Image (cartoon, rainbow, N blue to C red; front, side, top):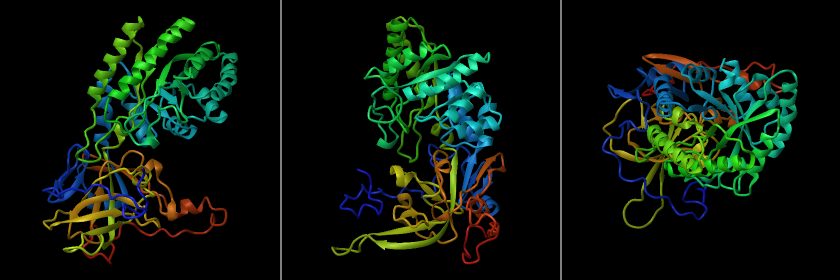
Length: 496
């Protein structure tokens, strides 16, 4: 059951487990959760060698701060762990022109889930032959873009999609081009240990061809018999934010079994096996994700053993980490605006507990995941440290929704006040990329930091940008207030 949007005291729902005892140090930066460059300097949070108050003063809040060194070192970790395999960055986690160029420069591949993600990667100069196009409902326009660009793979997801792609591929072959390389996405019937909305390999969902019903075998055989298509291998993806490698190993076992069935049915021996992504990260200190080295060793061992049992050559492996590369290295900075103590019940002995609702200047428009997935985050007071006692808090946004929650329950110093900065950890994946203009809030900028240098890689959206899409307001001047001035109503504020 999902949480009631107004919280656990509504809808007859059982309250969640207690947030637990406060930690010894409310300002501690757990290295498993925070970016690799995160430090406290004279009490203030520094990222990539830059103080967060300076970043907030220059770029405003809310603000995504991306530790470039963290992002690129995690990409390098996967490349090293899967040496001899293909590491595709799952761009849906977070994509912009600069990120596409980092990934290209660092030698990784890239998977796109829409024609527009593909178009952005191509516009940024990403090598087409290192791109795979995913999606359960690719349009003719998207498929034509992929064919014309000569991308590395189209990942086929349905029989309708095969019907759409074949004429486009035939036209390319007729014009002297090569057959279009494709993978067949298989649904392996494994439910990853994750939220139901991001588990993607069980049978009752929209992705891929079912292994259990025989559709995957039928689709692969059909593709092999299409002269304008070249089936290079199989694809599988079991979900997201997975901590246990057993699901990946079981998926590998089943997909290798399909390779064996295909050899029996057609005589074809496929040379590629893409086992997808979904590798989890630590959002909280208690989280225990599996590292890329462990995953690589276990997957290689399973695939090698299954291939040996079937007398198959070991195919070239591919994986698709997105969150595991982009997630841990980004922090979102917010300014506190309002603090509202709320008593949690009445009566009984002793004073009722109090939860402080700490409202910030962003919310579900820049991080929908808590409302959408019941995702858990942690945050710290970022502009200073405090010796004040701990207070039970809920960090909420400024949207007109009771479910507009960023961090459901945590301990913050009791003296947090309007104007202070809060930093929410591990917001690099699926936060900016799922951002919206709900209540006409504007999408925050993304600033990359490294070795003391801050570079804006995505600028802040303006009202002029939003007005430009409105047929009535397109020619109306939009206000553009300065973001580099301290707020006078917060004399103790983070930007003074």
